[in-house]
Image 1: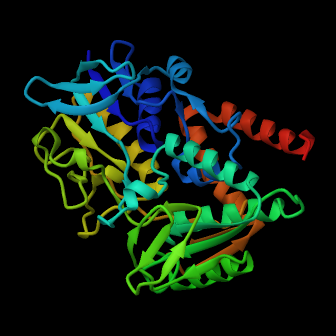
Image 2: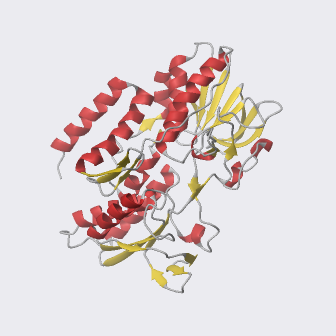
Image 3: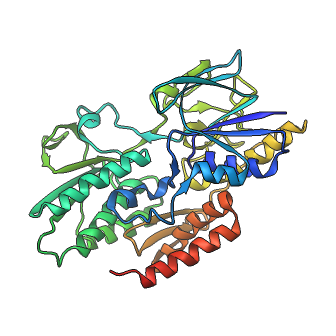
Length: 402
């Protein structure tokens, strides 16, 4: 009998728990350690914050899902690792501490935004790193929209998260334009680089900028934030940007508490350093994947922090762990980038394909963006459940009142 403990119920952790739970022998035990009760797909956190997310059809209860898919949900958060005794130390919602024994441990807690130690950012900005933060953001935005008058929202970081949030809020603002009591939003999207989507191809950045300008979003490039206070932000050039709500979505890193946890090797971004087989460099019984792991490739490159990378790593590690429990050797994880899809508003998206040589855009590409989420649902719940959810979603869109 082997016990596999997976920490983190995001895209990587949940998919791994689901795949293992349905495929290992009955005497093996799969435990998913996650502090939340429900799973939300992180690339859609901006929809939660903007109030356009469908909680009924696009969330998943870990407890009931685990019972159907062969794993157990243990509601807690990891605090430390005792590698000598193979014990995971956790903190439970009732305030108690506990330990979980493991034979194999997988850390898949994802990443958080990097505020680069900017003065006041932690205290005065909203972040979209957890479902709770996204829900709290919607509560503040909802109150702001109901307050009337002219209001301003600052968003730092024009990568995928910041750009998608800005566009989604602009769409909500447009939908409420006929409501005389709703606030009118001015949205500032602030980026230190010289273009939006700085990690994507130039043509994609240009197309995204045109769409943002069509939404009347104020895009501020080559602009660094020096400090943040309750009233707004100050740039490195001394410009004051007052705002009612402020978001920080620039850069990513693993949480600070993960740095050297249990004596494991980590990098400057707090990511656990792993081999190409996804096993940590200092412990053959501990694995890591997703945004919290620094995963090398044979050519010396690193796997990028993308949802598709987390999905593929989860599928690979599920096969590897199942084989390992049967006495087989680990195989290396080889990642092939399938391109990039960014949602710009609820009915529009931009995508790159063919090694960034082809740029697609429009409403149909938005359907491709939704398909990526549906493939995630297929992995965790199966084809039949995914199909039912798609049909239910379409029917709901047709029959629900505006």
